[in-house]
Image 1 (cartoon, one colour):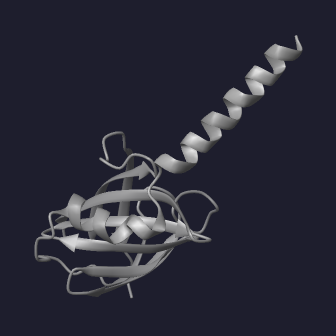
Image 2 (cartoon, rainbow, N blue to C red; image 1 turned 90 degrees about the vertical axis):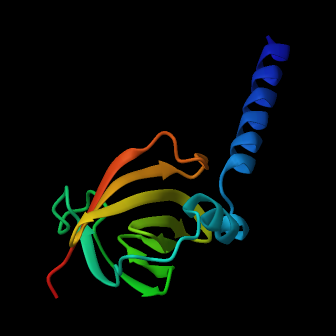
Length: 142
């Protein structure tokens, strides 16, 4: 019984360490963004205020409200509880959501209609952005 408990404990420790090493790290953000986006020149400008298009931004659910600044293809800002850094490439936006120096999510959104970004967000360890969850942002009236 004691060996089984020790074995289970070691297994959990190994899984925890493995999960900590596979996710996107803050030092890897810029090279990852350049690689995933293709580094095309921006065709859109998303500077300004945005909010979650699927959930009332006045509630504690969803992404909430945010504001972005865009300098050529470089994106910085905040959305809800997260600091956001990213890249605008063509009509697509690639974002990384951080809090406390840790990467929590990434996102790939596309502007097919003015004032609306549609796409998916991904867990921090989904570097190839294959298993996403729907995410839609709407430009706020300023």
